[in-house]
Length: 387
Image (cartoon, rainbow, N blue to C red; front, side, top):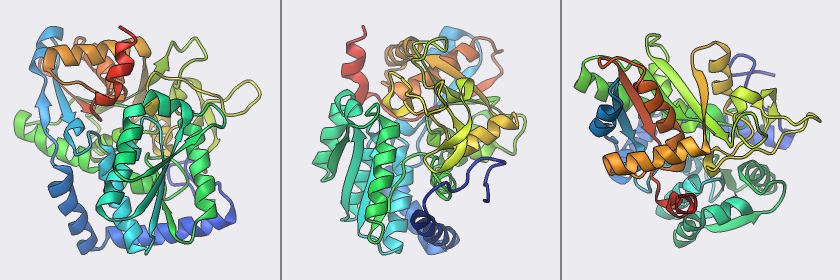
């Protein structure tokens, strides 16, 4: 079997799915080299999504910590409030190119579900989103938004009723409907070509950030920081900077109630190599060698695996993976809200927690870019219950 990222990646799926994946890969490889496809994709990014997203100097946050300059890549300002729509626009254009008429997707925090429902509505495609029942309760607002946009939201009760179970269920449904249905996967995970494809549609984040930081600082950043569940926003920020070895990169996972407990989603810190959702990557296992239930205050980071390219980047020591606890994320959420008037997603707040901790250890001539992957409207009620 061919692996795309060192020993990570692959296609660990039934033969009927391999055929569908190979069809998808062929269509993707053709589309990404087609100037008309790229032109249409860029048109919607500019005129519908609202790109480029700003790179904002967080002056008040920087002054509080007294160290490195902190910049925020404002993916929260995209249409529908997160980075997810970069990918859903690209994949739905690909689905149309392939003649598919129906879209299915999974979601955790609901941002990918909302972005999928948004794009499906714009292009007039039938859409069903699978979400764990626990996540539906945690993210009730996003469930309603998906339904407002015309999507059918189907609750998943199996397992822990969270993101990993929604992915399992969605893949199963895709197998049943493979002829006319396109599975729009939301993160840089799953069997090939999904991690590569999602990376392609998200790398616009880092391409813009590189150009923007050169314009304002005249140099590349010293550090990039992004949260990592499956890892699409992080790989989107990191990709264009990977050849620049002087730029250090940090992916921040969910430490939940602490790495010393079993209530975390820190795959890099606590996981080991294994197969999940059709890919060989790093996963969190229990004592019996089964995929372990994981936990995070953040539905978007509550995933027991990680994108295979992240596992590879850790293995070659190109990216350092750290973690932030629920409480650290809550503190970051509230601090950014009060200091900068920006309410971040709880997922992004994990990156903020580590980014500001890093900033105060650095000199004032250093520069950090933190990816603000989404806005926090969806999290306000949940945060209120913690304070």
